[in-house]
Image: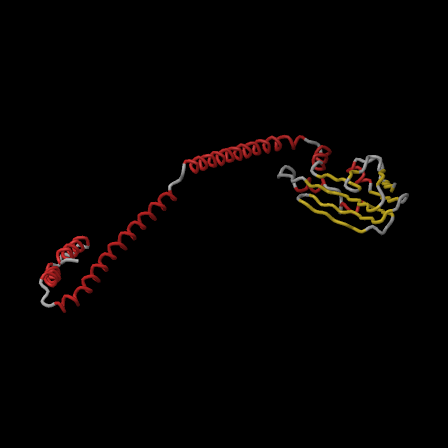
Amino acid sequence: MSENQIKKSIQYIFTENQVYDQGTKKRILSKITNPPQKKRRTSLMPIVVTICLLLGTGVWISTILSNSSQNQNLANTEEELPTNDNLEGISSENDKIAELEFQVSTFEDEREYYHEVIAQILPSLSDEEMLNLAKSHFRYELSVNQTPLTSNGKMEVEPGEVDVMLTFWMTPHYNVLSDEWYQKGMISGDYFSHIEKVEPDNGEVIYADGANVTAQGYKFTNMQSGSKISLKISEELRERLSLDTNEIEILVK
């Protein structure tokens, strides 16, 4: 490389890296253009080349970092900007929420209206009518293998396992009835105690529970063909079950 080429290279590096120290520039250029001895020029050349490489590397790294930072900022900006699809989705969700809020408001208005109407009607009901209303908040069902018992109290089942369950449903009174009338609407005592006699007496007591519902009954296993299960229920439970008899017979085919 000639001295003029080196000088131009150094000058270019000064310009690119904004080196304005005139004393430094003069010393370096003086060393290059007026080397006193060959020996010194030989020792100076690696230094000059190293400076060139370092400054050039600095420019290169600075450019890469700058471009990388710009790309990252652009990517972040693109991620933060919502797309048209997102905006449409948000708008749709907001519409659904507004619709649900409107429905809730409507239901609350209706509930308030019905409570006002009921409050006006209840005082005009007789005690018998109030008792029937209270009883309607509770429902009872006697089933055999998940099939409701018929009104005549008789049923046939297949041999094997037989489940007899008495289920009790409670309807929330929603502050329509007073606590006194709500209690009067229930069957007296423990509902399961209204099953007074069970034959055979080796049935396993079983339970089932759910929301506002509970059930209790008997499980009979290995019932043979021709055998029979009999129950006797109270008159009060018979009335609630709307059965024609309080004697229940379950025949195994």
